[in-house]
Amino acid sequence: MATAATPQPKRNWRAPREEQPFLFFLMNTPAALILLGLVLYPIVYSLYLSLHSYNLRQPGRFRFVGLDNYTNILGSEQFWTAAQVTVLFSVGSIALTLTLGTLLALLLNEKFPGRSILRAVMLIPWAIPPVVNGLIWQWILEGRYGLANGVLVSLGIFDTPHAWLSDYTTALPVLIVAQVWNHVPFVAIVVLAALQTVPEELHEAARIDGANVFQRFRHITFPWLSHALLLVLITQTMVALRTFDIIYVLTGGGPGKSTTVLAWLTYVTTFNFLDFGRGSAYAYILALTTLALSIVYIRVLWKRGELAR
Amino acid sequence: MITARQRVLRQAFLMLSALAFFTFIFAPIYWMTATSFMTEKEMLAIPPHFFPSEPTLRNYQTVLGIGDPEFLAFARNRAPAVFDIFPALKNSLIVAIVVAIINLLVGIPAAYAFARITYRRALPVLTIYLATRMLPPIMLVVPMFLIMRNLGLIDTPFALVMAYCVFTLPFTVWLLQAYFKTIPAELEDSAFIDGATRWQIVRHVLLPLAVPGCTCAAILAFMASWSEFLFAVVFSKTAASKTLPVVAASFVDTASIQFDYVMTAGVITALPPFLLALLFQRWIVNGLSAGALKG
Image 1: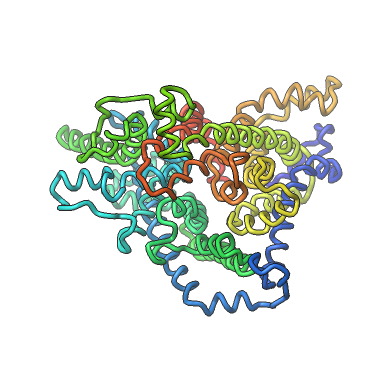
Image 2 (image 1 turned 90 degrees about the vertical axis):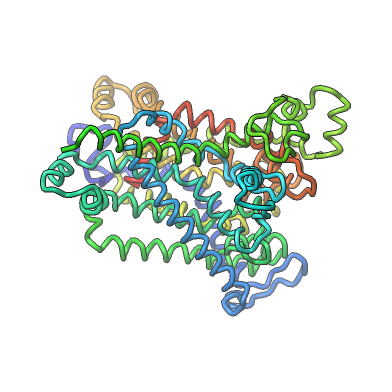
């Protein structure tokens, strides 16, 4: 997909042999200005802030502290607890989203009565704003009048309603369920698109050779999907690490610190405790983690050869 | 060989799995919608009523500030935030529409450059654009808050428009340039031979053919801005700039149970993206899968 290197001799209005950097940049100017001004400048400014002690509660006390914010964070128990919660939340939600999304895609790739209805409905959770997603689950899991309690109590599974969101053990799983609900459609769409490119002949040949459905999935479908799955894995990791909306609505990081992920800790440090220096350092740690993970994924998974399709 | 019995079992298994997925996907949406048509009394029924036995539009009327004045006064007392929903609807619409328009105005020339102008470093530039999407929004919101504060733009829709353009533009440019590249350049060639200028070619040949791609890009930008929450909650202080997600989430702080209003706010917030997703399902699915697979 080389953009530049397709020589088309006769199209002189596009001046194929001749580069037109001036025209290129002229047309990119508005986009580049917006992105430079509102991404590059904030990133640099954020780095600058993260090297300073800057708390809006103590005006006039803006001073350079070097890497102090970072060393304080890495030495604090708060950070490692949040890191642990982040890992639990991310691994749980990514594993479930990918599994359910792939299953849904495999299902939609088959022919059965009612497939078109499921296809039409499938996109809904993707379109629902995350805040609304959080609010819906908050109401479903409400401690007294919620639907989940109503059903479980009337079926006799629970004797009394359960306060899902204020219980240490259930708050994080609830967040994971809400997150999974929101993101399964995206995974299903991408995997389904990849599934539809699997050549039918491969399955035919394997069937004739006596491969059962699991062997066919393991040796044909899965390798064929691995490219799409890697991309979904990367996007879902980024999504999981930045999850904020549903935590704001559902748990506010609690009870205790049981759902305080790094993104939430960054928000609270900055906008509740108004510690912009430390908050910026948290943001940098989060961004670098995201970047490192993406690189690791691509390095480790890409080079396995299975991905080279 | 597959026997008839196996075929029936297989169909039954597929349909049961489909039913399980359908329930998981649809039940939360149904419950939100059903609750929005309930009275306060019915909402608090134990066990819950799966269907509203006396469905009412009163929650929606309250949001619009119409209906029985006595009830409106009661609602004002019970949940003042309910009267922020309507102004927030206006803010949300303005912000999302303006973002979609800016995306097209800025994105089309940039995408055209990537698709039709020869430049050796085009791919690196595009990669840099896309790389900005890797940044966690929380990283940008901290410095941007200070910048907007210094510019006096906190609590204005303008601050949100600027922030949302940052998130949506890279994907818009990417989607549009991919779309432009699928349009055969031969048509533009012949227009050029007929003596058309570059601007005329773009205006009369390329853009009319690119309408589906542009619509898709605009819709995705609209939906992303409509749903955004982090920047909205950080940048807005009053009803002057609060968007729907912010108002919908603001009920959470209050002690009493107000899910009849919250779910009404939820339906209003979810309805535009829901309708767009339904109407433009095919385009969105194509756009998303192309974006993820080739990106």
